[in-house]
Length: 586
Ligand code: C2E
Ligand code: CA
Ligand code: CA
Image 1: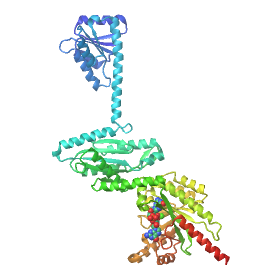
Image 2 (image 1 turned 90 degrees about the horizontal axis):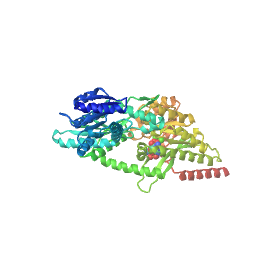
Image 3 (image 1 turned 60 degrees about the vertical axis):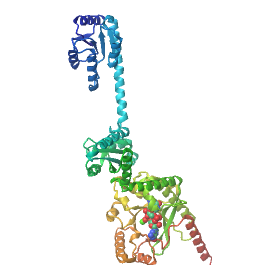
Image 4 (image 1 turned 90 degrees about the vertical axis):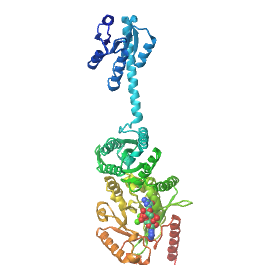
């Protein structure tokens, strides 16, 4: 055991040294005759304990206690236990020394070998306990302020720092500066977790944080608010453009995919920005407004930056209400499928249907083109979409079976619309397979309609999902053909069987000639690629005749039939088979 003995009195030093050594042979005692020399020793050597006289000229025992405390805070070793020895029997002094950080206090008259050794042993134990306490206190403090995974500030710390920053802004009003709050949410992060597991998700978060850090100077507060949501406080901005620049830089650095555990992962982010005092006056407001702006960025199609604007709040509330209604409707399954018949271009016989969803509500039901985008953004489309697939396949099995007896029966086909969001679900094709098996419907009777926007995302995932649906034997149609961007390249890249020429291209009115030529061109192109063609939005006899002239195989539109409810179609089928029966009987 190493003991540092600090005492200005040589006689006392020798006495204590002897007393200590008498009890055990393996004690090394280093002597110092004042505090400064003692501290010198402590710098170079590790001692188990310091025995320090209280009354010394210039610096006394309290100075030693304090010096050790200072080194405690800056030094990882946390210092050395210290026992104060004194000629004084003053109880107050003893208490003061203990409060200041000494582990024990002994009067010189009391010193015996036994007492000293016991005091040293208990001082060491006490010191260790204190050390442990300090460490766990520090840990708790870090845990309370830091996010464990990314080591960024957590929500709690972020709130404190935002409050501080805004207070400072208020104090220095005359500087005419502003604070920007950037909220950032990763797009479709959940898919990464679902598809590749949480390990990949966690590493992605860390790597994203590192890239974002590279866009910051280091003086900003960068926090993880939870999950895949982050916040950055930019203080003391002279111009709002700086926030825009930082946001732009962040989106840019996230563009390159991440290679994590052997898989390439792409991730975008939606960024919302609000300013104080320009938009908001306090912490709650700036947070709410940045959140609304972020929401807007998501609605704009993700991977975007949106700034808070004043009318956003109104729009936001309306949107929120719509979303709440939709959530309830999905839960209560307040939907129905209607089916729009598709006709053979030559003989105008019904050859199949397209399933189109309808919201069943007493007051103010939304149209599909209103609520499908909300369902996509909120990902409710995944649940809703599975319900649609199940219902439509079930309905087709009912129709095809009941009609089997009738003459000239040809099983009909069913077209089902798929949202791009559904294509990020790698289990989609096995779900479809499950429905086909359950209702005993051959895969080739089902065609899934995708819009070009779905195909714009050429991620490996999307391609895999589309290919696996095609491999089941289901057909794939490109919906709204002719309205998109780069139709031809898509036709090559994906296993597409059919194109549906968009209804906006049906020749009519002033654009008749121009649209006719356009459709003729699209038909020629589709024919050369041996694709099946459906013309949708056929509203007049003239358009039917035009489609026939162009040899378009399938027609769909209000002129031939609107989308109809199941009972409506059933009634029609019954009437039709009755007519056939009568003509047979004759
Ligand atoms: P879409 O897939 O292009 O569907 C065709 C839309 O055109 C339907 O509107 C249909 O009622 C309408 N339509 C059919 N014939 C004519 C016509 O001759 N003239 C005119 N002006 N319109 C015609 P709807 O049912 O309101 O659906 C709108 C869009 O909502 C659909 O466009 C589709 O993108 C989406 N949608 C509808 N149902 C579903 C669904 O079950 N799943 C998904 N993912 N999307 C759906
Ligand atoms: Ca469609
Ligand atoms: Ca369409």
